[in-house]
View 1 (cartoon, rainbow, N blue to C red):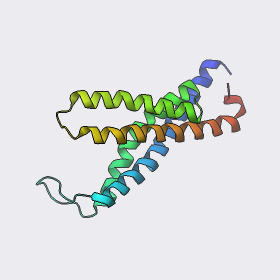
View 2 (cartoon, rainbow, N blue to C red; view 1 turned 135 degrees about the vertical axis):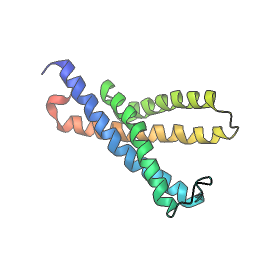
View 3 (cartoon, one colour; view 1 turned 90 degrees about the vertical axis):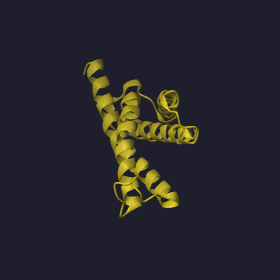
Length: 142
């Protein structure tokens, strides 16, 4: 199989692994944060009946998009667990710089810590799963 085909398959596999792991990890993370200090208000529109479930849903959706980028990048470069964590942190740095430059809120710095932590965890998770999968699929390894 040509090298470019392996690269494309690894990247798509990283995308799928990223979407799934991002939904699980960020869904759990947002549910935990919602349980600790959830707010039931939607700013005058209405109230949320189950704020923990709502937080988990939003976290799963946002985490899927975030981890899809991390997973596809990990698949593209063929990163393992440690390099995957570095890729996740690098993508988190780009997101954090963008958010910091566009925000007028002085409390945004506490949210940026969560972006870095989540990026590293997602990179580590997708890198670990991708390393396991590419070991099992012998024709896909480099």
